[in-house]
Every structure is written in structure tokens, then in C-alpha cells.
Length: 283
Image (cartoon, rainbow, N blue to C red):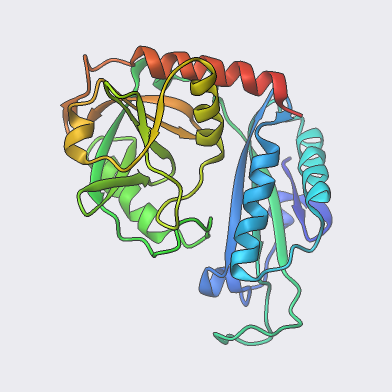
């Protein structure tokens, strides 16, 4: 039986219920975080907590507990669910008002929900085969730096990608790749590793941030600039990063093979370095 956290209480997941008047349900007035768990420890916890605070501040939602208490609750969930490998999901909304109104009541307490998902993220078939990506127009709102629960555009993109036989969608705006539907996008060129700079146009990926640091420690050059779909199609390698996938090679974009159509050496090396880093620093 999976145990969840709801507003300070631990209870069976199937009993964790939120009001239909919750603003996260009615308005997508909320944010979320997903952290990886490896060997029973939280990975990149400081980065995830810092991003949680940034997103909450951007929406003006007060966290009901402190960041150390958030992490303590996540660890409790990991322990209570005996989770060795997988993900911890956290969602914070503005709470449930008495009626549906665009303007929230200032006295409404926020809703904080957390639960875990067992998942193999280290040894997966995709690490050996790589993944396929489909590109499509970026239909999302302008504040993509906020990790909003408003994910309809990403759901639509993922469904379209799956219909094309792909595992991820790369969102495109003005000819340039912004990011994946649920990941950060990278390519490898003669310049080095290229990935988009952080701004309101993209989410600051916690796994991507760690990968950038590991790449530089390994003597690799990381260039923060936009890149086009055309550049990606002629790149030596392409890869994605996220908490749920770590680092995965992209071997095909829109039906065209990248490089030799196999996972590349840079992404493969970075994936192993990240796993070593995660095991060393998870807590």
C-alpha cells in the first residue's frame, strides 16, 4: 500500500482526497516538483527545493511548511514506502476556496501533496537504445520558468510525439528548440555541448544544471545559446536531461538519425558521471 502526504498527514494514497474546489484543479493555480530517488536518497534536493521556492514566490503562494520540513516529509515518504529507486512528486496549490472565483481568498490555506512512484531510472532499455524525438510548435504560456501544473500543451505534445513513434517532444519557437515537453534539450557540436540559456522561456532544469557542472568538470565546453532544429539534425549528438530520465541520448529527430543513430559517447559518459554523482550526494 502506497503512503502519501496531504497537508501534514501521512495516509494511504487512495485515501488522499482534495476538494473539487481546489484552485489547482479549477485553475491550474499551482506548482509541482519531481525529484529522483536513488539508493533510497533524494537526488539534487537543494536545487529542487530552491526551484520550488522560486515558483511559489512567482505565484505568490506561501509554503505551509519550511523547505527543511518539505525535505523531511519527502524522506519520510521514501522510508514509509521503502522506496529504493524512483521519484517523489510534490504539488503545491493555492488551496480550496469556498466558491469558484478567479480572485483567490487571501485566507485560503494552500494544499500540499506528495507521493512516490517506484521506477527504474538507472538501468533502462532507453539508455542502451536511445530515444526518438518529434519536434512541434511550442504552444505554452510565456512564464515557462515557473514549474506550473498547467501542463496541457505538454500533454498534447507528448501524445503527438507518441503517435509518431517517439518518446519525447521538442518544442520549437521561431525555429529554435526551447526544451523538451518534460526535459532539457542538448546537442553536441564542434563548439561543445549546446543548450539554451535559462530565462522565462524555459524551465531551469535541476538535472541539467548538475550535468552542466559535471561536463565542465570533465573538461567539456558548455555553450548556453539557442539552437535551431536544423542544427540539431546535423549535430554529432543530442540528448535530454530530467529527474525521471537522468541523461538519455536522442538517436533520431523527426525520423532522421542523429550521428550514427546510436547513443553517443558524450551523453553516455555524462549519464554515468551523473549516476556516480547522484549516488555520492543523494541524501
